[in-house]
Length: 300
Image (tube, rainbow, N blue to C red; front, side, top):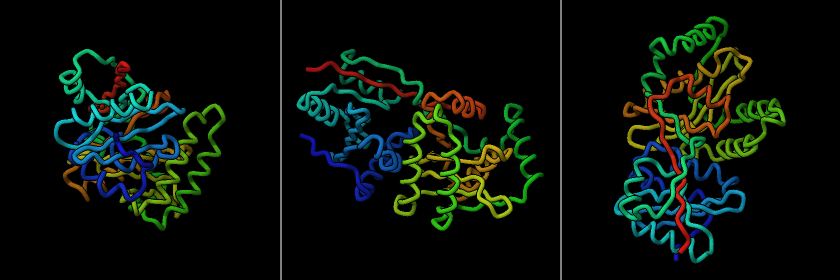
């Protein structure tokens, strides 16, 4: 029987190598997202040697993430299925990418059913494209940049722990501005970002801050999740400052490319089905999407 336990900061030491061994561009597997969203998903983790078992629980319904790591996934999947059966709940995998589907078919044939979960597809962009904003499709983004630079006395700097109180103040203002009809999922994000502030250095997060006349107007943060991919966990800006979102995005990508020349892709995560967020992410014309599925197995 799998020996699950609640995720803690101490788990980062053994989870990080398994995530890098998986080398997936998906935002679902890295330790940062597991830990930061734990107040929402109450995640249990288990070290199975060459692979990791993760069992989130949402609205009192447990499920499993794909067991990242290296080597044959069959023994781990079998253990996870046995655990679900013994506990009396369905064996369900979520966040399964297209890369994993052939493995599941080889192991289980057509025994399982697939549900496409479009709301949780990740948006992947060429780091070079987000840096240069070249091409006619991004002409509007360049206009926002030009206007921001013309209208503001601004500077960008790497985010440090000393900046976090200002980030928290800005986050509180952003939260207060959200109407009740916008709160679906916003509370969860607020808690996750607050956790990122509390454990910023311990998690090894990297971020950027955009200042205008000495006032913080935007921040962002994330982490490397594979050999060539950086995951931008959060990005917030004052919407009333024209171009602030576009500017923090460009400047942070430039910083990451300079600091980590191996990074070719920026994962800006999913849109959770929110129309405004989907439109924003699509406006940058993603180069790739990390398609994800829910896989449901019959009870045995």
